[in-house]
Image (cartoon, rainbow, N blue to C red; front, side):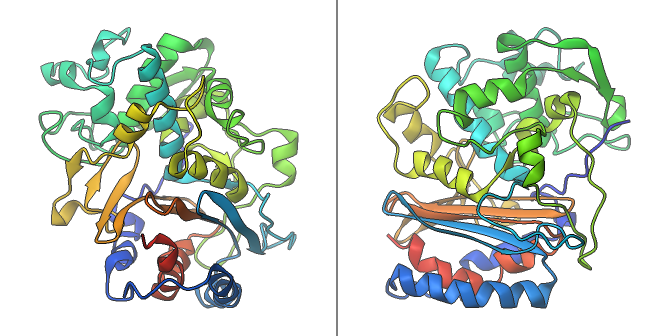
Length: 388
């Protein structure tokens, strides 16, 4: 059975929740904006120290400010054994930060009329995603992207897939919801290869699709994400960051196959660089005019509009609400969009101020990466970038 180890940030077992909560805690004093040059100088000193203290082998970061890429740099190594250095072009697993890119592609399909945001996905699917539950007929793309489907994060043998509440009424972070939507889109837009299949959690059979090609044509290539993919290739492999455990030891790395991408691509399968992802973040924070690939203002605004408020015990990364593909922090200085990610050997975070058209993306290749990217000192240095 093929299975990737996903430590999705909604899971308390991932260990990111206590750290993520600091993003809105006292270290954020909302002091007056400092110069970006000063911020970069502080980061160049702070990041190597935090990496040493927390045993994080490699990190890549990019800052965008006022609608432009301001700075990018790599720190540490992409492989603890070979000591190859991290650069802005080093390819990391984005983990759940992948969801934002998929959400954008989905909304463009909604804009084009391929699917409708509020039409039940069961009307497009060739077979029921969950059997024996009439609530399946209520689940729409909006519910998936706002994590209100009622589906759990990942099915297991002990917890078979089920709908835990009426769709649209509550929040429950769900990788399975994203897989459901991805499978519907593959049915509508792609080609399934029934000769290339694998088994996953709870005996789930998944066959290869052209998801990688679909995402490259629809988002990655048009947005200048030249080094991003869902499948390995020779160029990507030369720049790949390798995963490491909490002791800094290399973890085994399995090359993803097409059924893996069909199962996990939308929820956490993006392979990208901080430079590439910064290009995508700029398309969200400082959108260019709508075209074949870019959203209209109506759909762009809907993507960033809060869809559901989060209760105190539901809050991820200090977010107050969830939009379509993005978590939202409602600050006095304006909304901040964000998403974190975590799976075996990788941790990631992106945040952005809609008002300032500024933000950052940071990717790490260690299980301790969250101890850097959610560290109070790291947050305090970066916070002025997000003040409107």
